[in-house]
Amino acid sequence: RSRRGRGGRGRAGDDRNDARCARLERGIRVAAVSFSTRRATPIAAAFFGFWAGLTFTVTHWPRLKIVTPIERPDLVAHMIAFGTWTFAATMCAFFGPRFSVRNVLVSALVAAVYASFDEASQFPAFLGRTVGWDDWAFNQAGVWTAAAVCLVIGVTRRGSADSSLAARRADETGDACSPTLQQNQ
Image (cartoon, rainbow, N blue to C red; front, side, top):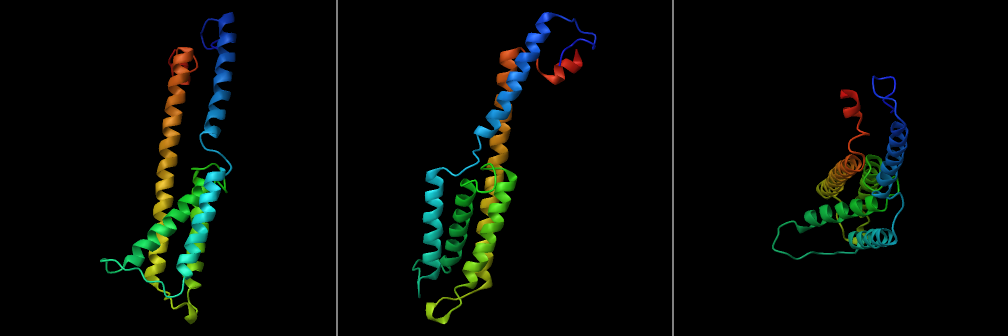
């Protein structure tokens, strides 16, 4: 980090600047972790529990009929129900930071497996329900649409956090810590 040895002037100020850059770099790591928490907040966990229970109850309610002017409202309901299930599981951060690629993809895989189990478990005749490939497909569409939205949120938040931290670092240091500027000097 010091300019000594690269044709720069070896001043005592360089040591202070190096220490300031090190503090900022530690701050960036802390900020990156803080914007995407590693554990479920009580609200996220409560909502996930509520939604998972509601989804199971509604999908297994005997002879449930949805009356609307739409021809197959159950398909839209499948997509919304399992998309919300996936989003709620992702918000709980069970598998890593909230919108990290790992957490989103593992949450989506768990949701996809559960959605498949949920659809298959409606088979007993006494429930008066039907098991269909179209229902399963819309379950999966909801899961993977929610996963895609979560990944976009994660990339967007990471990008805005990175750019705001870079701007803050440039303001505080006068670009003294910028590797690009140091290489060009």
